[in-house]
Length: 310
Image (tube, rainbow, N blue to C red):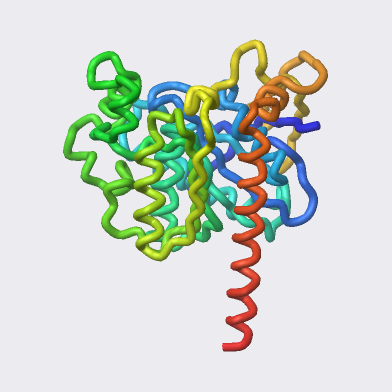
């Protein structure tokens, strides 16, 4: 049974960021910084339990972070805050897994944008990162792909268009590769990627294009398109009646006793876990995640052996 604990991580700059940690594992389980969807302006860790549930089913520890939302916090506020959280996880991942655990980033929709941008930042700032996992990422601020146009979304009354406007603030920000990774001209050297989309996903074309660009840049990338119907990316949001209520409270070194929270309810199982793993596509996603984690580990072993022989 998967449980979660709420914590507050203090970054190197002294900021306190709320995180929800899913799945206590022994050994060198992957630790994944998860960023929720919500078109940059909404969403929360409480409303986004599906992806963490799938990550834990695949053997990882998921650390879902509450990042600053637009329009109160425009680009690059959320990115800089999450990069600081990524650094804190590098130092303290032994709290929930092992000090030798590999660190990944993952996100759905707007969170996928942030995860892709964090991978670029990690490369540029020489921060260790094992991989990036993007679920239906928002990567194209122009919203000009055929799949988006075919879904009959546009500039008026569209939450994605409104979200891009709130996040960027001004059109010139869209030229920055961290804001719009799909338009980045330098992708070589970023962490290996797993990109997941679906046939009925309006964001599928930008997912496919980003996977293609990464591959051309020599980045190891796996791109999988799930058959319809999936209702992606909307399926990632946890319905209120299905939200996970199985929890525990932890006051370890990463915790701030004043800021830690735990609900008083104690129900059985499953909430988001049942909702996520009961979906027709869930088993395929978990298999893709397991394969990706294993391939990254194998590549690292090969690189280590080559370094010894060099």
